[in-house]
Length: 248
Ligand SMILES: Cc1cc2nc3c(=O)[nH]c(=O)nc-3n(C[C@H](O)[C@H](O)[C@H](O)COP(=O)(O)OP(=O)(O)OC[C@H]3O[C@@H](n4cnc5c(N)ncnc54)[C@H](O)[C@@H]3O)c2cc1C
Image 1 (spheres, helix red, strand yellow):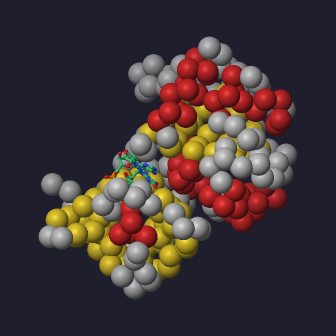
Image 2: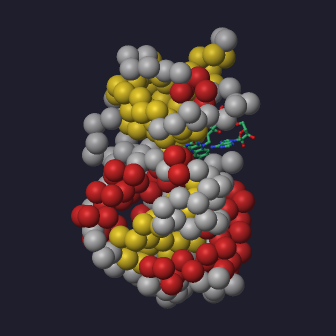
C-alpha cells in the first residue's frame, strides 16, 4: 500500500500550451537528486497516480515537477489545470536509481542527455554541489521539438555562468531551425561525433558516464551508439557507463 501525503500547489509555471511545472508545498518526502515520486489526484472516485521526477534540489523548500500534457492521458491534463492553493497528492517515498550515487567514483566527465521533460532530474542534480565537486566536465544535452518547449532556460543560463568552461549545454530542436541548437536527434550526434566536436570533450569509457532520460526511442538509439564506443549499461554488480530512465 502506498502512503500518500496531501500537498498544496504553491505556484504553477505555464511554459507553453503543453508544458507546465508545479511547485508543491508538502511535508516530505525525503529524496536524492534525480529521484521521482508519484503524484496523484482523486478523479471520478478513483485515485490516479503517476511517477514524476523532482526538478528541485533536495535542499529547496518546494517540490517541483515538470510535465507535458498527454492528450489521451488521464492525469497530466488535470495536473496542468491545477492552480495555486489547490491540493495534490504525493507519495511519501521517492524512488529511482538515476542519481549521482550510482555513478562510479572513477568517472571524470558526466554526460546528461534528455528529451523533453526528462531534463527534470538533471536540473535537480545540477543544483546540488556534487556534480561540481566530482566532475571535470558536465554536459547537458536537451532535446525538444520546438524552441518554445525548451524550459528552464534561465536556470540553465545561470548554471552556464556559474560553471563556465566546465558546463556544456547543448540544445537540440528537431522540428524547426532556431538558435544554435542541433536540428536533429541526440543519438545522431553521438554516432557521427558532432556532439563531442562541438564541446571539445570526448566520450571515453575510461572517464565518461552517460545518463539518459526521457523518450525510450532516444534512449535505445543512444545506448546502441554508445555500445559501439565500448560503453555498457551500468549495474551495481557490474559497473558500466550508461544509466537510463524511460518516461514513455
Ligand atoms: C520513472 C518515471 C518518471 C517520470 N517522470 C516524468 C516527469 O518528470 N515528467 C513527465 O512529463 N512525465 C514523467 N513520466 C511520465 C508520467 O508518469 C505520465 O505517464 C505522464 O505525465 C502522462 O500521464 P497521464 O496519466 O496523462 O497518461 P498515462 O496514462 O500515464 O500515459 C498515456 C500514454 O502516454 C504516454 N506518455 C507518458 N508520458 C508521456 C510524455 N511525457 N509524452 C508523451 N507521451 C507520454 C504513455 O506511455 C502512454 O502510452 C515519468 C514516467 C516514469 C516511468
